Image (tube, rainbow, N blue to C red):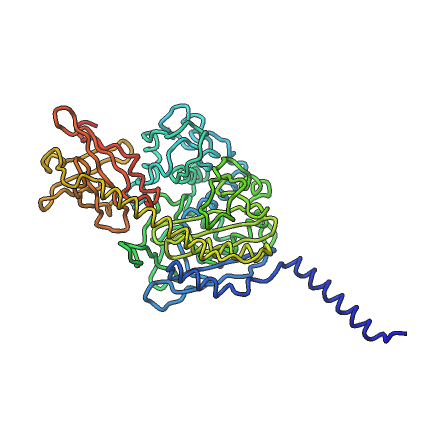
Length: 526
């Protein structure tokens, strides 16, 4: 007869394996063992001063921590409470706020907008009548990519109400509901439905009905709320080739589209709520119903699925859609629910994997999407039990290739221009007040023998017009965080100026610099 003791050990070992397997099933694997070094490598590769990271798994906050520094050249470290601009990740907050009103029976996703916002008018009367709250949230209005963003970016003097009024002057780029084109103005408009229905501003509603119940005590809706001594990161951007601290931008007039500032610990709570389908994880009650959660993650607008750059071929999607405040796509057989965000000096990524009960948040204080994406996919691969991929190298090659191609395009354009050509008119003839139907007035004046252009409702947009060729000039903005633009004048047969059009100089210019949507007419001929 065998000794019973080894048998007991075997049974105990078997029980331990079963217990560990059950525990892994319940909690999921631990964080990637090399995570800290991987984040440090990503920060170095993409030159990001500070990052905040949150990971939620099976309802638990696995990680909420900071890396690096809040400000380049200063020693104060990023921690789990350091606030970053989350940009368009704000859109999911605006959608969730509207969802609470749908739950309360105060509105429907398919209410016509004009019924909630009297005076709401789009360029096309049919669209004015047919556009619903759902349409405001799904980037299918017919407007062009980023159309009208110059009304708030860089910061302007226009109010939300004034911007909504100006929608009626923006010509559509496609027919209604036929194409996807990302926009910000209609999300801001959606946010203004909240005060129209409740009498409470979007800003206060988010504070009272989202931040407060979730305990998001280190979040706000405006950089104007920052005070000396607060725990916040500073924005950084590459200006004329050098990474440097830039000024904070106050984007209150576009708040519902992108003005929230938050941190790793607070965003982890937001992700917990999302993965729990609107139910609080630490107590009874809900922010929004499971039905609303399902609606917000359901496809609304089909997105194209182009092949990614060769180094990122593994990220090719089988499907892509925009839902309500969230983008949808797949990765290794799992549905991803996510969004990116960007404001001057900050970019961020929020990603949910509902079937894995997994959520990831990466906040950065530099404009480097490769940093947050390489960290994101490193984390996803770990929890998906996939072989490791050097995402840092892959995203760095894609970035370098994109920048090289853009530089070659600009060099080619420089070489092809007729540098010896002259303007058709004396410089002073180009000076004057010009008017665009939706932006308003833009002034060109003589200063020290040259032309200076200024956008009258955007204080930072003052630039020197440098002659490029013929009747085209380049607006070289004195604030170097603003993308340079070509300004091309068209003449009437009698030699007077008929109009001027603009276009971004760099192919890498952010789409929110929507110069191409402007048609400048001399003010006396508007």
